[in-house]
Amino acid sequence: MPLKDILAALVVIVLWGRLLARHPVTRIAPLSLLVPVVGLLCADWFLGEKLGLWQWLGGGVVLIGLVVNPSGMQAARWAASRRRSVGAFFWRSLGGQSPGNPAGVLE
Image (tube, rainbow, N blue to C red):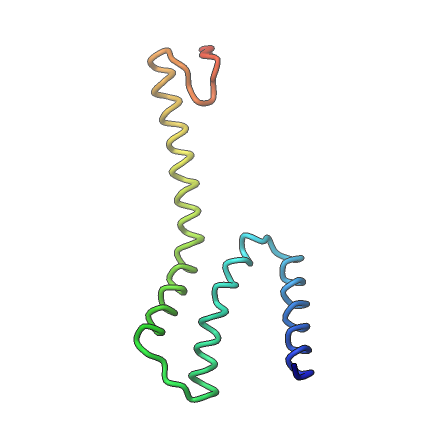
């Protein structure tokens, strides 16, 4: 393996480690999904390879997934909080147990 490949891998590993040290893993890990997209774009731009329709569509799906992922997590948290508050109110109004009150003790 040529020395430049080893140095490039070393630089990437160090940069990735610094990035993980400064930011939460949940924000950084999805960026690893960009590796194939960047590889395809570099092949197109620097090597003159022509990408097919499926390659462009696949890259687009990855990018859409990276955009939807953070907003999807926020929507899931919102739905879970609504479910808990509505469910607790419903069960308390019936005199039963609520998820936050497993013993059934009414306040």
